[in-house]
Structure formats: C-alpha cells, structure tokens
Length: 357
Ligand code: PLP
Image (cartoon, rainbow, N blue to C red; front, side, top):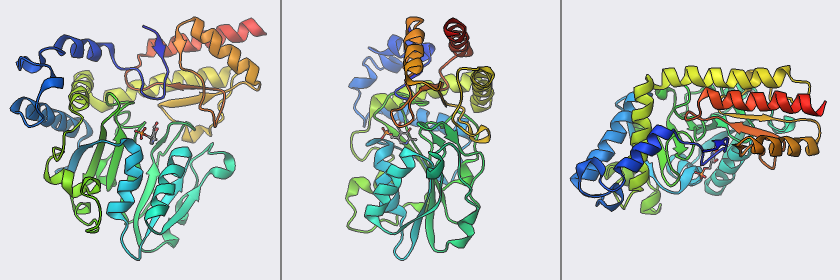
C-alpha cells in the first residue's frame, strides 16, 4: 500500500480495513453481510446503537444532544442549517475562513438574512480572523464556523463569545482533538476523513434546536424527521454507519481522542518543523492558526513544486498536490496516518532539497 496524503476520502487504518474485510460476508454472526441487512432488522439496529454509543463515549457527548446519520454530505448541511435554524427577523452570522465557509454562506443567503462577522479573505485565508466584533451583532440565530479549513490549512483554537448557538463544520477536524461538545449548537461532518467511507454525514445537534423548521420545509430536510425516527426515516447509509462503528472501536482501543490528539500533535509538529527548518519549503499559514490535519506547503516555484510531487510519488508518497486555489503541496494527515508515514515525507523533503541545491 502507498502512503496516502489525500484530503478526503483519505487513508483508513489498515486494522479497520482488515477487520471489515474479515466480516464482510458474515457480519456480527448474522449469517449475512452488513450490506445485505434490512435497516429495520435487529442485527442492523444493534450496529446503529453501537456506533452511536461509541461516538457518545469518545466525544463525551452530553445527554441533551442527538446524533443523526444523514446523507448529502457536509454540503447539504450548508442548506439544512439555515433551513432549520434561521429564524424570521434574525440573521445568521458567518466567519469566513476559506472556500468551505464561503460555500456554506452562499447557501444560507438563499434562505434568509446573513451577516459576515469576520473574514480572512484579504490575506487569502492564511489566518483565522479576529472575531471579537461579534458583540456588535444582535438577533443572531446562530454563528457558523469552519473549525478546520481543509484547503487552507487553518484551524480555530478559540471560539466566538456569543449567546447564539455556534455551528461547527468539523468535517476535517472531528475526532482529531478533544473539544467540548456543549460549546456548540450543532457539529457536523462528512465521514470521509476521520470517520469512515463517504456517503454518510454525522450531525450532533442540541435537542432544543430541533423542531423549529417551517411547515413548508420538505420532510427529508427537517432534522425533526431524522431525530424522531432515529436516522431510520428512510434507508440510511448502512455500510457507512457500520464502518464508523469500526473506526470508533479502533480509536477507543488506542485510548480515545485524548491519545489521538497527542499523536496528531506529534505528527503535525514533525512536519511543521521540517518545513520551518527548510530553505526551500515554506508554510503559507500563520503559525498560531495552523491545522493539525491539513498542512499546505510550497516552494517559490511552481515547477519545483511539481518536481517535488513527482519525486515524492516515486517513493510511494501520493496525493500531495495542493488544492488548485492554494497551489503547492498539501499533506493531509488524518487519524489513520502513523507517524512513520510523516517521517517518510520529511525524509523525502530533505533528500529533495539536498538534491536540487
Ligand atoms: N466542509 C469541509 C471543511 C470539507 O473539507 C468538505 C470536503 O472536503 C466539505 C465541507 C464538503 O463535504 P462533502 O463532500 O461531504 O459535501
């Protein structure tokens, strides 16, 4: 297997893939694959309950939060959030930190009044902007942030001080570091980075925020529908829910998110140190705001970037091309990536730098 630095879908732990393989034709002794189980069967109900139970455990989710497994990706949440939560005569506030928050804002604008309380667009999103001006805004239904910016490589280390519920697009940060769930109204994440295969979206929502959607909202877009039916209103992404369960068991067996965060900090420090010590590579991101998961880096020539990406690929280090809006390289190092893989990247960077001198 190659070392996969993809931003998502991304590398999975080998142990988890092997376990899924070994259970593929007969899952949990049901005499059938999880793919063949009715979503109304006891066998699948047990899988769903186990996945929810483990997510609650590893994220320490309080009792007054509901866990929903939905479809449509994090991108559908860009619409479902305002459709369910944006009240009449109120505004939805957005902190704009990159392409994904811009997309979230674009959808909210179609639904109602929005306001941008801070943006780092003027620095090409190299930092998290100052959001202390939030106190100037009244009648906010919620404040939306993108907790980790997959493309730009930044992350929030502090939250806005507000009475409005904070909504966190935590697609590329979920389970990577400890957070206090009760600081948020809603946390949502597409699964395909730290949770499992694409096709399932996890929504963790405070109970009191459910049930306020307007009557004309289509049934499938109303959080209440999915809460009432325990994510079984229609056929859910059953295989994805099962795989999330296996990923959570793996995290739990390693010592939970606390241990995972420790490993992620070690991995990220190793790569940032290599970048900062290099005379060839640099990080475009402000130090205090650097992501633990997605690390963009560059040289000052596109040709050299390209040559490095090819050099790395010859050493089985793949998917290092940066997003087209940022250029250069990007190493995404989600929970599944062991530190040895990051060491191999750092070695390749040093070797390349020495070679082209
Ligand atoms: N938000 C963030 C922060 C992302 O990184 C992504 C995808 O990479 C999305 C939203 C979109 O997710 P999806 O493809 O599940 O709709």
